[in-house]
Image 1 (cartoon, rainbow, N blue to C red):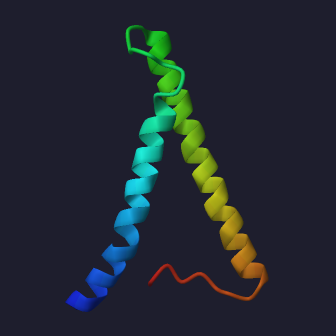
Image 2 (image 1 turned 180 degrees about the vertical axis):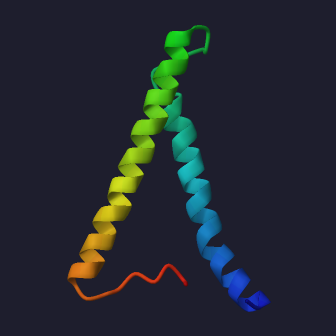
Length: 77
């Protein structure tokens, strides 16, 4: 991999990761004002896991759509 390829990948991946992380932070804290009990920690863990499952479902759905229309996923490999 040369420097041009690394820059091209990072220009695309850094904003995506930043948006996912900021969304995860906002979604995880939803419904919890202050972490003061085990219930609050469970709510945060539940919110975070729901967000991860939702994103994974979107990725799988997008991969299926790409497969059905004839685009093969390469993931850069």
